[in-house]
Amino acid sequence: MAYDRYVSICQPLHYEMVINRGACVQMAASAWISSIINSALHTGNTFTISFCGGNTVDQFFCEVPQLLKLACSDSYLSEVEVIIFGVCLVLSCFVFITMSYVQIFRTVLRIPSEQGRHKAFSTCLPHLTVVSLLLCTATFAYLKPTSSSASGLDLLVAVLYTVLPPMMNPIIYSMRNKEINGALSKWMSWRLFSKNKMSLGLLW
Image 1 (cartoon, rainbow, N blue to C red):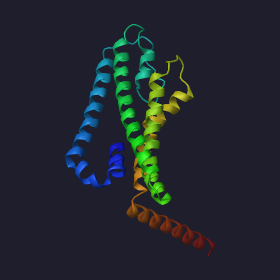
Image 2 (spheres, helix red, strand yellow):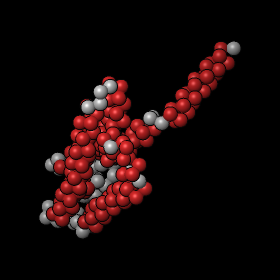
Image 3 (spheres, rainbow, N blue to C red):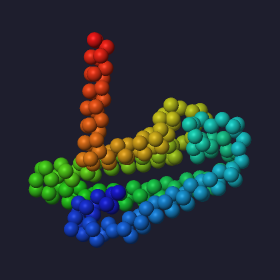
């Protein structure tokens, strides 16, 4: 998404040529393949860990840091290596996104009209906000020292990076679509009309 924004703002005349079907397939495939490899490594290592800390996971789901709390002290080093691989993967994505947005902001700040700058920023900031939320909370969850007791902060961070970004993505990107905005305003008008009609019926 960052690369798409970069090309559309910094190289608008080359957009059709650069962001073609092949480029989209390659970007989607690289995201899927890296995610599958990372997940497979975590899953494989989880089955090799010896657990000696009980069977209660202090989380909504079997998250890796919470599983490591239950592992025997000398049996989870391979999982730590996989976590380091995952962090390197996330950091490389973060560096790529940061470089893309630095170029975008440099280009946007050179736009003479304030309306043009506002329009360019409005296309980038929602994506940047969601990605920052995901990367910061996930990095915090996986890099902070594990504690023996569960905390509300652990649960909140897990919700922030597993539930909130996927939930916000369709909302953020759909709000920019004129057809969806029109359908939403029609639906809201219909709901208000139905409520008013029902309240008038109760009064009669």
